[in-house]
Amino acid sequence: MQPETPTDTAISHALAVQELRKQYDKITAVDDVSFQVGRGEIVGLVGPNGAGKTTTINMVLGVLQPTSGRIFIGGIDIARRRAQALERTNFAAVYAALPGNLTVEENLTFFGLLYGIPRLRARVDELISEFDLKKLRRTKCGLLSSGEQTRAALAKALLNRPQLLLLDEPTASLDPSAAQLIRAKIRALAAHDHCGILWTSHNMIEVETVCDRVLLLSHGRILLEGDPKSLPQEQGSASLEELFIRMVR
Ligand code: ATP
Image 1 (cartoon, rainbow, N blue to C red):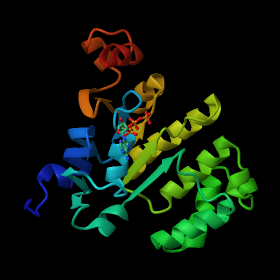
Image 2 (cartoon, rainbow, N blue to C red):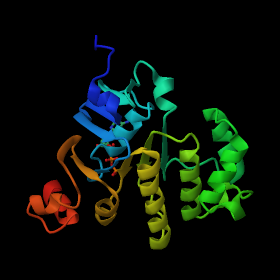
Image 3 (cartoon, rainbow, N blue to C red):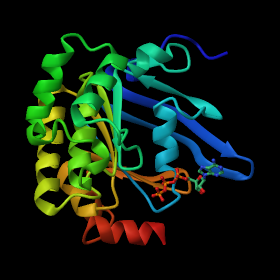
Image 4 (cartoon, helix red, strand yellow):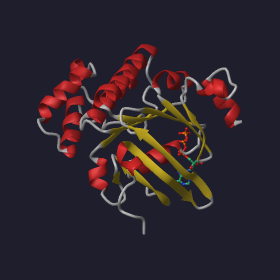
């Protein structure tokens, strides 16, 4: 039996993952991975298709049971105090669209009720304004463009003022201008609200711009870790993209 008391590292970080593993029969999707996301830190999780990024995120979100390993959110072990750990967390992903038959406002209200947000109407108004959704508040989410859906999904992800935010390719469907605005918002969230952010992306220029630290995952293992601005040079590559391709091949 694992000791209940979290380590100092787990307590001081928004997320601490210790020797996390997910085994599917003969496939090891995540292979004893350990890493942390600090409070106010943006960590990029990058890797080729099938590297284990989504599996890792789904275990942190509590929707997939790890084969072994531990996950602490703000020092709380999700295996022992799941509800408390997950109420500090939120996520947005292109594959997890908001229910299309509800309007933007109905979706935010619905999720706000699920999270038990106090003064919900004011919080919904605040987020609608912050994500430039005023004209779309009564539009069904299924009718929104992909960029608009991303803004609505991010507004939903911030409802509970999470301490840990998981973003799976948040800018994948955005035009360059919309993507830049979203990146600025996420950076501000980390800087001002001290939210820890785990960000997956296949866009290495974006990772270099946004992330404080990058983890390169391949075949379920972390191959490299460091500051995305200095790591390529330290490893003898001209750019993060070149380093990524060299490591993965
Ligand atoms: P992508 O960039 O393509 O989204 P990823 O890094 O998110 O990839 P995962 O979706 O985490 O990769 O998949 C990791 C590995 O685990 C892959 O080899 C995948 O085929 C395998 N895998 C994922 N889910 C299952 C499952 N339910 N059963 C068996 N294998 C699975």
